[in-house]
Amino acid sequence: QDKISVTAFHPGLVNTTFGVKGVSLLHKTAWLFLSKLGRTPAKAAVDAVYLSLSNDVVGMTGKFFHDKKITKSSAGSYNKSDAEQLWKVSLELTKIQPDAYGKIS
Image (cartoon, rainbow, N blue to C red; front, side):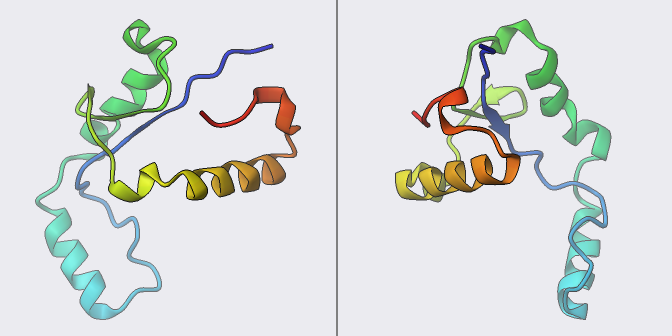
C-alpha cells in the first residue's frame, strides 16, 4: 500500500487573471488592479514544487504551508465535519474505496 502525505499551501496574491470569469465588472476591475501587486506565477508555484520534491517534508501530513514554512490555515479548515464530508465526496468522485487509504485523521 502506498503511503500518501497530504499538505496544502497558500500561494499568496498572484498576478494572474485566474478567477475573473463570470464575475461582476467591479470584482474584475478590483482583481485586475490588486493582482498587479501580487507575486509572479513562478514565485507562487515555489511551495507546490517544494512540497512535491523536497525531502524536508517526507512523511509530513496535514500541514499548511506559506513560503515553505508551516503556518496556520483558516479557522474553517479545522472543521472536522466539513473535512469528513470533503473526504467522502473526494472518495466518491475518484472512485477510490474508503479502506484503500484509510480515514482522515
